[in-house]
Image (cartoon, rainbow over all chains, first blue to last red; front, side, top):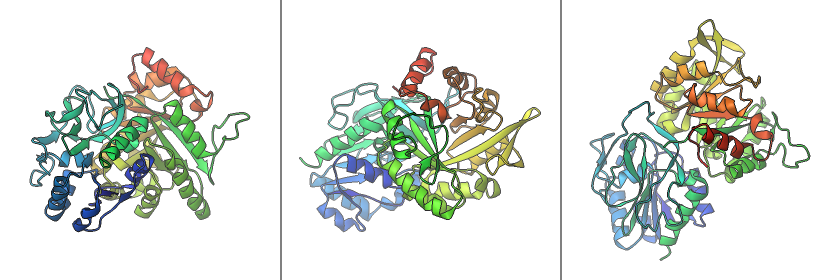
Length: 200
Length: 251
């Protein structure tokens, strides 16, 4: 079973449906101690980075301990930003800091709109377990105003005014800035790739 | 590069698509879930389902419709029509909507936008604006275009953004149903005044109308209903046409 962390940042119906299509059951732990039975962890989230303050303390500790057992973690949208050290959107809130760097607002340059809403293409710079089977330039659905910097953990990047991290991957930590559950076939493929990681 | 989005609108009454369905001999005609699946297959970028039902019984049937449509759709789904309160929005979102469209209720109480954005995030809140040309400005109408308000479309869009709306669904009352083309002047006026995306609606008749509203109208997305019903390949043919015209689309 994969644990879907519901910390009050948005509606999780679509995420549940997406994982169902990828062949996985999710459970929503009511308490961090329930992560003991998780084979995978998903941190979703939309809206302001401040919402991730609900993860500080017990949840963060339990998630860290679970990853140390070898359980993979996937952050989606705000959940990806939370994998970094923090965000200019809520400077006092600490991120999970699995990846170095801070999130910042997308530049509103050259007539481009922020928020970045819609389908945009992925650049895939290296082999990745998460993005496996998804071709260069595949379009996926984004909706966000803040974005993570490109680091060596980037498994995919995207461009909107600046180049930003669209997906990250380390040994056990994964994240996507876009919404795989809203990105048609490519998105479901990515969820399936993550589900496969929970079964190794 | 961010693609321009094509959005199919399904007008639903008592569980059936009621407007612009023209497929002769197709059993699926009128079934919103089947239609949404077909559009998804053809490459539509997003689906909007509008409830044109007036009764309470119909509202419940509509939630079943949202559930059926969203069950098979892994692209964004917006639900509008009759969303007057937080419980209405909650019902639509719990049934599987990713975004809710709010129109008259936001005009009577703009704080509804803020409350919905606080609960679901701005990305889930679409302010629907119906506007009509009056002299050299665009006047906002409420209640499905029947009731004039004192608001100006550009000013209302700016206020809605500041109150938490994440997108504008902008319908030209003058062009709606005419197939004479989108109102590019209206769309450009609103789009250049806000930083959130603007979805142009009303008047789609030909493929060139879409190219025009993206280029001259500065639209981020365009919505239509009947245009996509013409042929099995309308979406893919339209996207090819737009690419030839230099408009970036997802394919």
